[in-house]
Image (cartoon, rainbow, N blue to C red; front, side, top):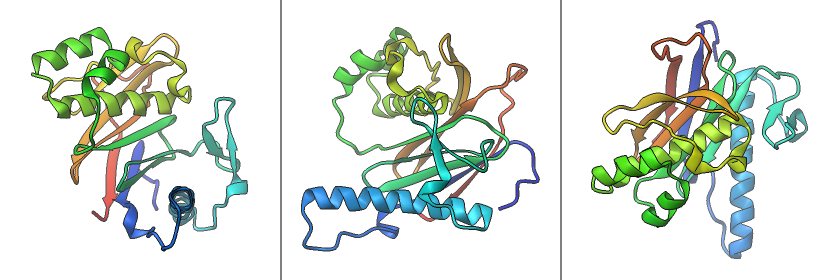
Length: 219
């Protein structure tokens, strides 16, 4: 994979059943364990392809908050996410602190309860004016997840204190929080999913100068 262009983000998207299948008989616990192992193996394979040499579990270290990075490539940023049926990995050599989240739009969710817990008052207000549109809900939710994963703090800050500034008719934006700083994000609706990638925004980033985002998918 070439990194000659400045500020690139690569997103790899595929169905989980393309690299994992349940081998009966397996208990539910075994299925979950084997699926998790397959997802991490897929991540390692995709990273190996980019560096043209094997990436293994011993090559990873974690930050104090548990976010993994590669020992030999500390400036190489990556993050992955999966839903019930899809897997997504974001990588970049130039853009630091990546986060990605994917949710299937058909997923059964307790929309109202989760919104009351996780949405900023402004987000909740916009959602109500949109007649509780589920796509807007997933856009807000995946953006929060992606931003918090990018920051490396996860849910250590209150979700309802982070205003993503999501616009129902736009698929990207910028948000900030005093504990994590400024983050930009881009939303995509693909294969019946809401996919959001987020990254730490430069202080000099005027007018939302986004990096080049390339999606490689087999779905």
